[in-house]
Length: 282
Length: 260
Image (cartoon, rainbow over all chains, first blue to last red; front, side, top):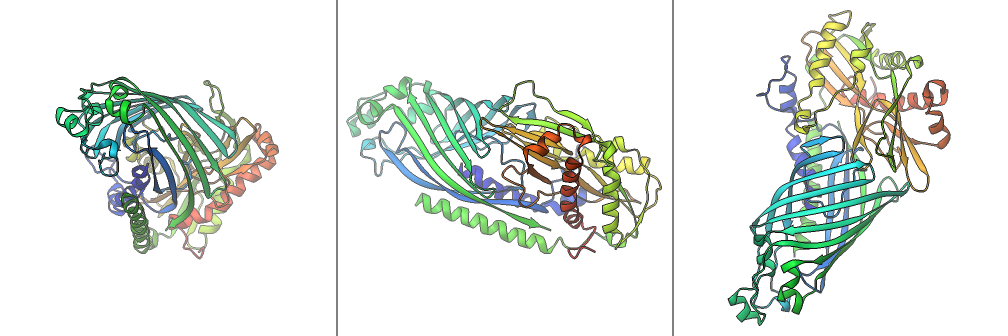
């Protein structure tokens, strides 16, 4: 979420090179396949959005306790146009490289936070798991404006080196002009490489933690549901709230970390507000 | 600590963005040399032939765009006159003749989105100006064509002039739009000197598009089902264009901020 929000800054920084590329684009000869791609000019009306989210989520994967945090909302986008597009809290930051008649696909990146023993007695003896960067792609399809199917497949680097596949469906209901409610089922599957670092217990970890050894394998990882509400108070002010529930499955649910010190019921929720204002660049 | 870092990063990003914007402004205020030297100019407007009626929100799977002809409004002549009166303070505005249909054709975007960064529309317009507009030899041609904006949850595209009805469980709302782009094309080299899609208006309402638009009441939305017969719809479209034309001409540096 936060990454997607700040990506606008990176886009803006990239498009600062526009005067150079525009000059290239103004060549009288038609563009060839080898000529530089002309980037759009940054001139015009931009909308800056700032805000914050308050989030509650499992303290670590499989935890029964909830950790609370806050994240900033920040984006810079061309004014108008994209604000009505549906995004789910589960969506990884992504770019649609293919977009046709409701079907889109492209690369997606997600950060899976580090797990640190510090502050969590349940994890004593299990050791830290580093930050994982998951890189892959997404496909999504809107058969109608109010229903979306989406899937992401990502491979981890860093904290894990497995493969994660997420599947979701959302019904998007404009309740009235300013209030939109969406909800739908979720399913996730993971390979052994993506499951073992978080749910497996090695012999050394077993000795140190007092939990039995456990060889966590991949497979079905979780099933659940999610819902969000968005309310546009004014053209500038927007508020939103969401809740996501997952029931761990397979070896994730069977791990002694979950059965003895955690819970297979994983709930995330959040509320947020943002304020948008326009900046005109001559 | 992570929280503090995230907010610090966001604040730094905001500061960087504003600094880049401010820095960018200073270097972009000078009109291109081709425009500074231009004396004669022709205006080509091709947005006023078609009115699109679309729906978003709770709609059926077979929902398609409907079209109605509004050629009888004479909107392109009016836009040409309004633009000409503003440009007349700085340029000699010469009458031009052109076939409207090829200029009014909607750009077909590629499904492979990176290809859309390489605008085929610019090349097409240059060729149209070179081959279809008379007289040739003016210093610059101002070409006003349809622009696009995404709407709805799935980001479908609307173009030009029309109405989008947002269907909700409790009531619907409608947005009137007049989406257009101004290209300024050198009349001798046929380079695109500058181009800009008209920006959204202030106070456009909750559902703002990426161009001139505003929410309209149920009566006007109903009248828009048969736009050619409605003076009220025509007046509302003209108002959108009037409110945005001066700013857009400033954006393409045809007129300066004082309006001359």
